[in-house]
Image 1 (tube, rainbow, N blue to C red):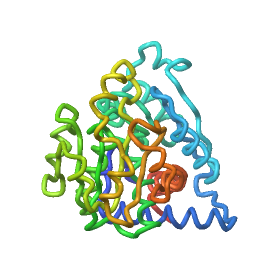
Image 2: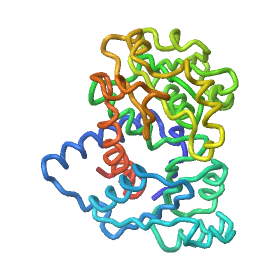
Image 3: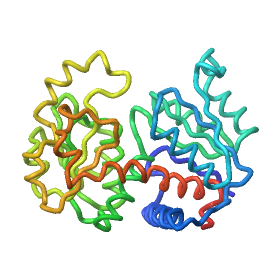
Image 4: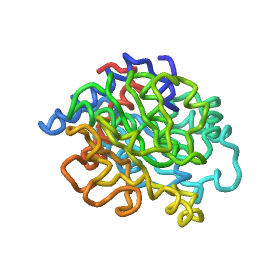
Length: 304
């Protein structure tokens, strides 16, 4: 079987992405009906967390458990990574012991280097540049509520961060418009935008970005590792809050998403995240089902 990695959404073709999300929807339905699967029996996923997480850890561990496999949690505090062992050496060693590795880290280059020396699938659980697993869940959620994102308009509010980059990747693959509203100094990386400029609008005007949008998305203003900038960022990003006023400018059937954790009163108003247009709890839960589909795709070659 050919080794496949999942470092960004661009590691999949359009057909593969759509098939994976459709399979995730089936897995979710089957689980609700009490149907069990043992497709990953005897398989082990190693999970390297240089950045801590609630949703990523619980969803991957539960996913492996529900598919008959097991997951091992690894942190720099209790592995040789914390004592300076190169990522390349860790990749070579784990390739001899487990069936796949999920890495949640800071620099995206670490993931690229790790995958370059691994003989098993490597999954990006989050890096400072991309968060593709979250996008699988977001795409699944939109499909469940509204159908295909193709031809739609997505409004991104706030920092042009890893989530924004992954949404730009998704726009390229699925063929939707993404309006990125952000302060000039927090624009997304030009390398991510250059992939498909025809589908990306970058503006400093949040009203223009949200107008008529089918989906409005935001994220925290200060990500992990940026805590020292929090006060400054709060002042800069204040006009980009996903407020009820901004949501009123979107399409009347627009949905709201946030990858969580959320800070009510900062990047999103409580009336939005807890309101009728919000699907953030279903979105969070879909991390489990999307990642089950992803693990099957990578470990049993999508033999569903």
